[in-house]
Image: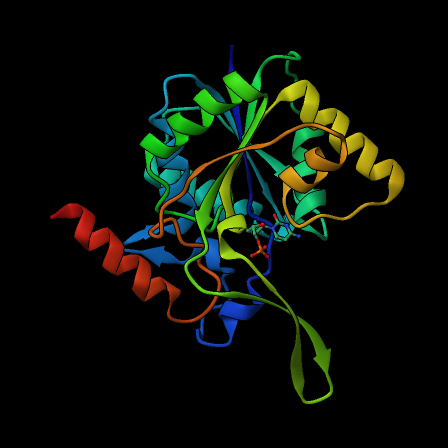
Length: 237
Ligand code: C5P
């Protein structure tokens, strides 16, 4: 069994840009002196079963990525593929260039989640070996409301019992054959999902959920970098 890793990193980071003067998308910003994407790559490098890492970036960011990889000296082979207009397209491009067997495992991880811990990656791999598909999910602590958008905000249409709710994080892991079939079906039906599990679910497969961690944050908006720095400093103690 081989494990391949895909890091979609072709987002524009527009929600982040509001609070930062830099032109770099968030995945290239530094967290404690190391680019966010390099933090994520390093976590997966530590997993001995990981054979290859694929990073999807915009054509305009390829040089920046190559420079960062050269500077931070990653031991494993990193293949750079062209990102698409959506996260799904970026992952699909990487999947197309990935030469895997049916039972190999593919892990997809947001490039903007730099604090993923190797222990969680191992638990996802184990769950994929048992179930064929598994993601990291964080149990909801807030009460969850379904709403209908209105001109001046929203009104509640339902309250969803929170014991049934987890927030999907990454990594999301799958047998390679299953993931490729799910992506092919989604492309055929023009289905757009915001994560890989949604494509695999609609392909009829069961996806297991393992417990996530609050520190596995997705750096999305101003303030998230400071929060990530706080979690990182706590880890170092
Ligand atoms: O936009 P969002 O926060 O959902 O992005 C999640 C991950 O998907 C990020 O790592 C981002 O760089 C990536 N992405 C991508 N291609 C896109 C949009 C997002 O690879 N077109």
